[in-house]
Length: 217
Ligand SMILES: Cc1ncc(COP(=O)(O)O)c(C=O)c1O
Image 1 (cartoon, rainbow, N blue to C red):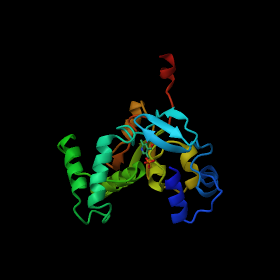
Image 2 (image 1 turned 120 degrees about the vertical axis):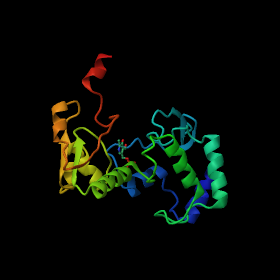
Image 3 (image 1 turned 90 degrees about the horizontal axis):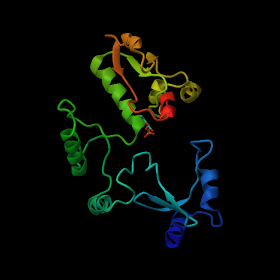
Image 4 (image 1 turned 180 degrees about the horizontal axis):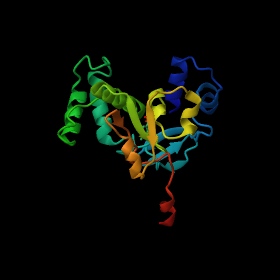
């Protein structure tokens, strides 16, 4: 780890004597008011270790990105094999890259027959954007129906369908023609009409917190 740090400092000409914690707070744009700010130096399975050697059980798993556990040997092997061939060649689906085509085949084999085509994105927000664009283009309509208390990502379009003023208010004006309905209110479903391009729902809610009935369990 020490050698890696020395190499990195030399490569990027980082001023010595500044800790990673200081760099984190001084040089990185904050994305939350109170970041955990654990300096993670190793991760394995469901465990994390910080710079002081303290061990943590990771109950977040990169918000489901590391859902095979950290550094799963099969994942490491696949990445290493791919690194020996190429890393990145081109975006926008211009060239055929077999890991991507094979993964698309694998995914579609596990989906209903009508979901037979995959649009890969690097984030959930992009998936939200892509879905709304696809729906608008395909239907020729503009109305998007979303739900109060839902979370859809941090891009402008995703914020427009987000179900809370807390997230979206600072970024107005947002996308027009977005209507928010309440979950579990069947009469609200009447707002879905022939003018609606798509309905977007966070089917398993997280950011909204626990509904009251959870407390009775
Ligand atoms: C339901 C849902 N949609 C969209 C997103 C946005 O994903 P990302 O942060 O990768 O842009 C999230 C992120 O937690 C999410 O939970």
